[in-house]
Length: 166
Figure 1 (cartoon, one colour):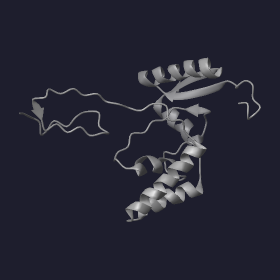
Figure 2 (figure 1 turned 90 degrees about the vertical axis):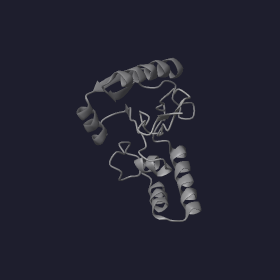
Figure 3 (figure 1 turned 180 degrees about the horizontal axis):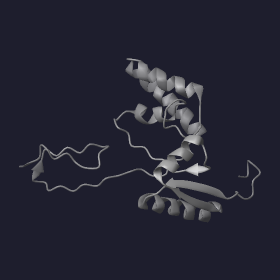
C-alpha cells in the first residue's frame, strides 16, 4: 500500500457460490482481511448458474474459484490460466505464458517440457492473477490388516475394489 500511496483499502465485494463450505471460507477470509488489512469485505453468495454467469462476464471484484486436477501433471493446473481456456475467469492474459504452456504440451523432450513449465510458473507467480488460499485434503484411516486399497490423489474416496485382508 505504501508503494502505491494508499493509506486505506476501499471496500471490496467477494462473491462465491452457495454452499456451507464456501460460506465458511468466505466468512473466514472476510474476518482475516478485515483484521489484518483493515478492509471491509462485503460477501455476496450466488446460486451456481448466476455465479458462473457473473464469472464469465467478469462481473466481480473478487471471487472464489476452485480446481481439482483430473490428472497429476503441472499442465492440469497451468493450462487453466491460459488465455483461451474456457474456465479462465480471471481475465488475465499473457502471450509468453500461453506460448510456454502450449510448447510444453506439444514437445516430447522431457527436459525442455519441464523447463518451459517452470518458466510459465515463474510468470504466473510474478504476475499473480490468482491468490491460492486453501488446498483440498482427504484423510483416510485403514486397518493395517487390509491391503490392496488404492488412494488416488485427486479422489474423494479410496478405491476398495481390490481390497483384501492380509
